[in-house]
Image (cartoon, rainbow, N blue to C red; front, side, top):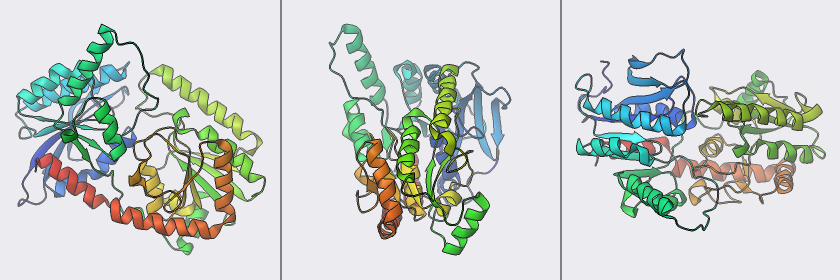
Length: 411
C-alpha cells in the first residue's frame, strides 16, 4: 500500500468516501473532494473510495489508482437507489477488511435513503461514524398533502435515516435549516465551506488576460460573458442565451461562452441522458444564427481558472444549488458575478449589490443586468474587489481542509 501520510508525526485517521462516481469520471462533488486529497493527507487523513460506474471500460473491483485505494462497482443499468444501496453495502464490506488500512473511523456519504438503513446500522455497530455531505438544495416547495399511513411510515424512515448520521455537513446555514426540516437535529449540522484554492483561483494582470484570450480564441475587444457548468435544464442555460440575445442588440461586441458538458456520469439512467441530448438541441436552436459567431459552446475544461481570468462577467441563472462553488471560484479570479435568485442562495455567498449583482428572476432582468455590467465598467471593478476580499476571508481552502480533518479525526 502506498504511504498516504507524509508526516509520521501527524496522527492518522482513515475515512471511506462513498460516491456514485469518481475520477476519471467527472462529477462536481466528487471532483472537489478529490482535489482535497493532498491537503487531507498532510493533515493525517487516509482516504479510500467506494464508487459505482456504468462504464465497462473502467477497471472495477479493488485497486489502487495514484496511491488511492478504490473499490469500483460496475452497474450496467444504474438508478440512484441501486447506486446508493451498492455504496452502503460496499462501504460495509470495506470496513470489515483487515488488509491495507486500519479500521475506518468514518464513512462519508453524499446522500442517504432508507434502503441503506441495514448497512448503516451495521456500520454504526462496528463503531464507524456515519457522515453525510449535502451538496445541493432540492428544488420544489413542500406541498400539503393528506398523511396516509404509507406516507407517514416513509417520513419516519427518512427521519430515522437522517438520525443515523454523526454529522451532516452543509455549505450554508440555509442548507442546514433544510436538513432540520427533513428530520436532522441541530447537533448534527455542521457548516463547512466548500473552499476555494486561492493559489489556483486568483486574478492575473491585463497582460496575462490578453495572453489567455489569445489562447482560448476570445477577441481582445470582445465583452466576454461566461457560463461554466453542465448544460442541463436545472442550470437554465436557455435563460442565459435568451438574455444574451436581448443585451447584444445594444452591445454588439458581446460574446457568450458556455463551457461544460452535455452529459455527466452522475446522470444515472439512459432516459435522462436522452433528455439532456434533446435539451442540447434546444439550446443550439436558441442560439440560432449566432452560433459560433457570438454564442459559443465549449467542451468541459480542466482549466476553469483560465476561463475565469479571460472573461469579463460570469453569468448564472441556476434554479437550485448548494452554495454555488463555481460562483466563489469566479469571484476569487476577480470576475464580476451576475446571478438570478436560486434555491440555496445564502449569506455565505456574500452581499448582493456589493459582492455580486443580483437580478430579479426573469429573463428580461437577467438581460438588463448583462447590459448594466457591459455599460458600467466601474461597477464591475467594484464587485470584483469586494468579492475577492469576501472569498479570501471566508472561503479559503485551507480553512476547509482544517475543518474536514478535525471532523474525520473526531476532534
